[in-house]
Length: 173
Image (cartoon, rainbow, N blue to C red; front, side):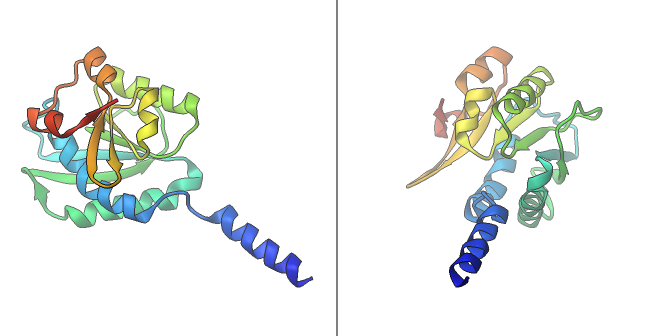
């Protein structure tokens, strides 16, 4: 009986455990807004930087944590823009954000999100760098050193323009 209770306890903890790493969230919360601002596609006259975190319902609490981390890192303006972060499930948004941060989704949904973002010239950043293969624009590789990752094919195909500084720092996939 004790073994059964222990098994059920461990299984339920694994079932409801987040598959996101808080340390990675903390790093991405600092770097993603800076990567976005290094895009030359942003409206220079806009006073805000609108970021949508694209999540599934099961990951809403993790998305809210990322939102809170970004807002706590940038409570004031950054390069003259107020950072505004929203947690959303994917749809064809009427008001386009400046950028999206995409959390875990299945392959078909990632392709659909990437196609929408690229068609609408919205900067798309992935929590997981392996998701760049589906057409998302950028991510961050966190290892011995932390480096931005950019999807060279997406940049070339859709004509996104980034600061030479970001291009020099980045690894390309």
